[in-house]
Length: 273
Image 1: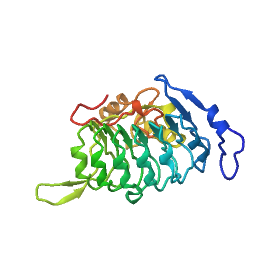
Image 2: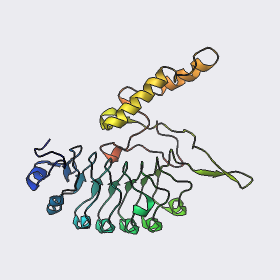
Image 3: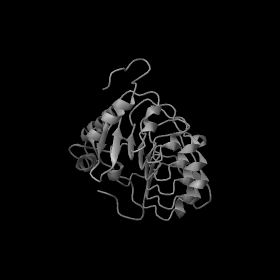
Image 4: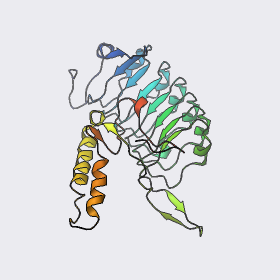
């Protein structure tokens, strides 16, 4: 961890940032400043115009600079697990962006700018684990979007335009209070049935998520902590034990390092095993 960490968090300089740049297998320049206690977006990063990918995940950043749209070379931006409460309108200037991860922040629907609809090259957008109940209608223009994460939010219903995103093949809406309309026209709040298994390697989880998932796994392998006994309970617990995997955690965390292997529900296909 760089020197200079104190009450105001880690101070990142251009020199530190340049040393953290690595080449990806496909020849892109990736700057990784994850889990460094950064509280303020380092504006010096905007000087690194040759960076294609930026990872500032697992920090304490509350606000993005208004001129983040000047980062015109970015193709991949990961800001998951921070404390963001808003997204500046200038993010719409990142026309080349293909992957954007804003999950596990403090975003409300009012904090999402309409300019998200300008990111027409976006293929993957992760908005899970926020406080969203709606999306900007301008997002209907995201014709290239293939993956959309909306899990662990406040959606009672999904925006109609989600159904017409022509490239969308993966959608995760788990753990939202979705309103299901019954035959008599009246709706009741129900949780969506657990249909799929979501797995990531435990090394991809932040400390909090890893602890929570291990506790859940222990409860399952002990029989869920339920009242013991005979009957068919043993079979049910055995089935749950079968669905645990060494080194992998379920359900999936937003803290996966590489969104290229992000596992989410695949529409109109069999569950991912």
